[in-house]
Image 1 (cartoon, one colour):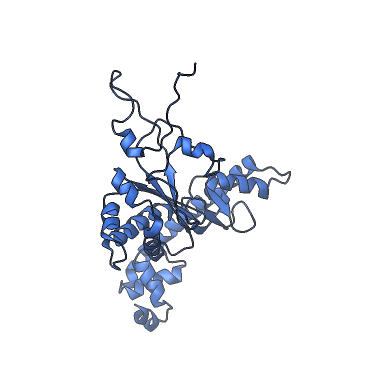
Image 2: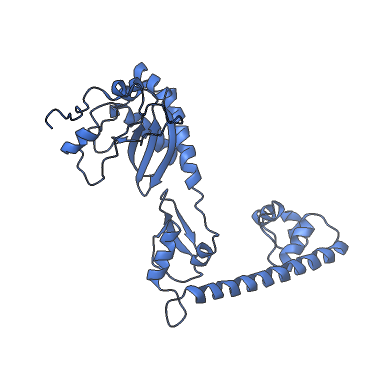
Length: 308
């Protein structure tokens, strides 16, 4: 196509012809369109039909751009907080955070490109505040985080390096990876373990480096790994976040068991206490039949009324 256009005294690069042929680009000028038609071998008598169609498409595109510009101007006037009809940087920051985005550079204008980062997965991309307010901006990396975590989990279970013991590997295969969350540089992975033996085997964070290595091959970004084991039911309420991990009430609410914390700052195994579900049968006894066996014998004894 490039040679045919050049032979006819026209300019048509190979990359431009490829993008137009794959419908990734529209000819920007009549000259570009004519050169493309010559490269396709279309007879000259049929060029006028294509040029007329191109002109109609350009007129429609121009009218759509004008309507979009008016819509943006109306939206800006609606949210503007300055006397000159502009959106201030503080207001722009608040509107951006409502969309789970964070600015990575100063705000320059309502309809100008702005580098932002997703608060969920820390991906960086460029948006316009007008597009954010019209709901036309979504993070394309967020759905990929869980896909990458599942791929890394499959790599971990393959145990190609052989660093996982049979007991650890059996426990990992008996567990289920729940939804992961990557916020800024913090990657939280929830792991459901169905029995006491599996939870005990995974209590130690010695298998975390293998998981982290698999994750870094997939995610290729800086993060701190935090694994949360989800196991069993209990009638006790969760520990308030302001309590220190070794406060006296910690032992009273959750005895030492398979969900204890790891002893490293980089890889922490946290505990989640799930509220007890009410039985479907009102006459059925509350609590699980093997609750004592599941949580161990370290639960403090219930108070008695012998002293009353």
